[in-house]
Length: 188
Image 1 (cartoon, rainbow, N blue to C red):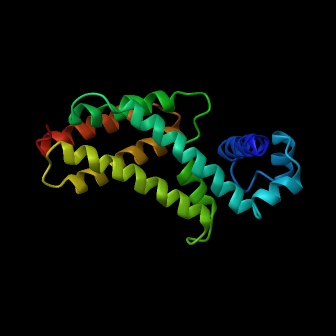
Image 2 (cartoon, rainbow, N blue to C red):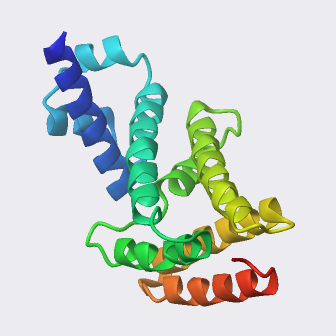
């Protein structure tokens, strides 16, 4: 059983890495088999379709990414926690393997809005928004939910700009906008 878990973990990590670097459609099952060292038959025993495998890899990424994001923004007063988001994003944007938001990238590759991959992408954005809601509510904002949505847009916008342009200072610009937004709403 432990060996199966290890194989599954290796398979998910490999799949996530390949699809993040090259995209879902450009990553064939042959590449996943070769890079993971997991037999095709074993893969299909665990995940009956490529979509199911990709969705599972994205769920694993969601867990890891949210843990990283929460750990990087969990210290200090609520306003400081919200503003800590943007230096954290900049460090991500400056990493060698940064390719934008894996969830937006994956959703963009699927034509079917009801696909399992899109569902995982939606769940990730809902989880991120939920976390932002917690912090904006702790700031005592009258429209905490509205401000949380605006912050989500700043995060996703900065991520998209950094990915397309290669300019990590998109995080700084988004952070300045977030600071003005919080000041407008008298965040504490």
